[in-house]
Image (cartoon, rainbow, N blue to C red; front, side):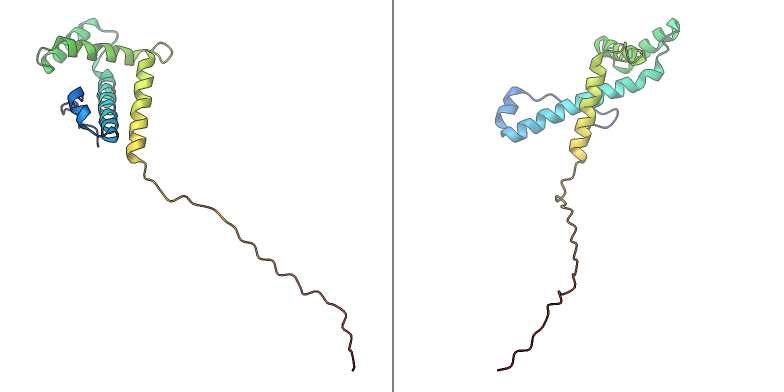
Length: 143
């Protein structure tokens, strides 16, 4: 599965009823896809830090109003974006650890999706050394 494209709808959470109909392996894969999608969405929000000016209050207000319009008046979604963008502007030592965990989760998901199992390679080196035949003394025996 691939993450949703930018601007597309986020992956819908797996309902308990739907999860119970899936085999355990499929259920695990669906949960992984949901978590990966949420991580990708959070990283998309972090990447919007350029829209936020941490020093200009007027630009912050204008940006926040634009986000409210972008989310069709959904204040919760606009506030979530604002909080994540504010955290993205923090120095690494002050930033919430959740951003680091989110990045690690996303990277793990990418690695899992791009990992191609290969045959295990066994490096064997064969060395052949030919030793000279030993020279044994010969005796002639007459009957």
